[in-house]
Image (cartoon, rainbow, N blue to C red; front, top):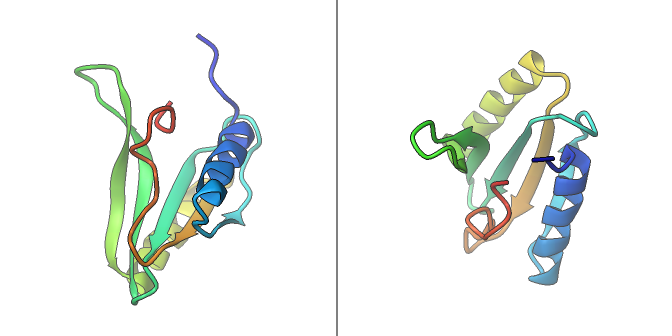
Length: 110
């Protein structure tokens, strides 16, 4: 089964957020075809959560796992380390006081 390119997925995700008027932007542009994606949720109260795509070995399903959560500065440090390890990495930031990120929506884990 063919997979979506990272760039296509990012643009589709940003559009889905835009439709619900949830601000989001690309912090770091990664590899267009196969770059991994980290989504940082900034709740604008000094707290944040970073998500990365994971894989459930039992079911074979993709899912979004929490990479880091807590003070925004600490989450930013974790993301900075990940960028150092992976030059192809995409980093997106979603800003929503209600904590909406839509990653649990159908089609966004694929």
